[in-house]
Image 1: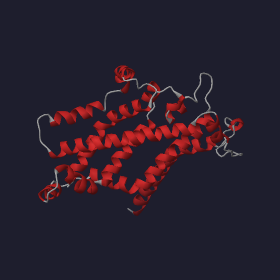
Image 2 (image 1 turned 135 degrees about the vertical axis):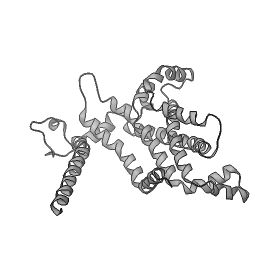
Image 3 (image 1 turned 45 degrees about the horizontal axis):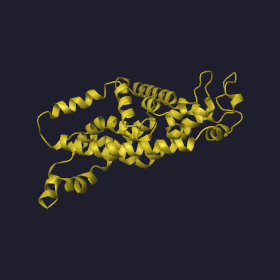
Image 4 (image 1 turned 135 degrees about the horizontal axis):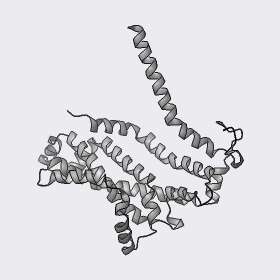
Length: 277
């Protein structure tokens, strides 16, 4: 029995170790590629650790492009879209969790269905709409589209968090004189901060990484986001792997910082939404 337990534990360690290597190696390869000089990019045999480390790829992306502008644009679009979708989803999730009305289940089902519809189906009407509103090649077009795109799933997430909080909390606040909105903001929201943080980070990351719609609606240099800028490193006859790897590393840093500061809330929020009393 002891031997069986040891072999099983060893098998699990080996499997998890292989899975960790499989997961981390692409990130490691992007990092060392960003630190390689161009002449060492495709040496044979492959160098798993470059002989010469350089920051020229990081310098180049700021020299050949307005990468600082792209970072600002991505931060602006992702933050504003995340906040707008969070505020709307908070109110709609509260209504779906606390009230009974005709068509409630159909609305929830429709929210799920929207997540299964490919984006390219809505591309033509969205393009015509943005053109009529004169928002093409402008950041408000992405903010508007991303907000609408994030609302359904964020609403479902917020609904699950509201259902975890007993209605007696806001009922007690309303007995003491609070309005329903006041009870929501002063009593319920502080309790479910972990869920709010998890929902905002989900929306932020989705908007930060979105490429398809951004490429379709943004072509102006001053309005490009990071995914659009990285896509421009792919030309007809060449791919600037050094610049793309350096841009990828820099684009990951804001999300890593966000996750580092909000890790406690994310874990607590995901656990809170997964458990049921």
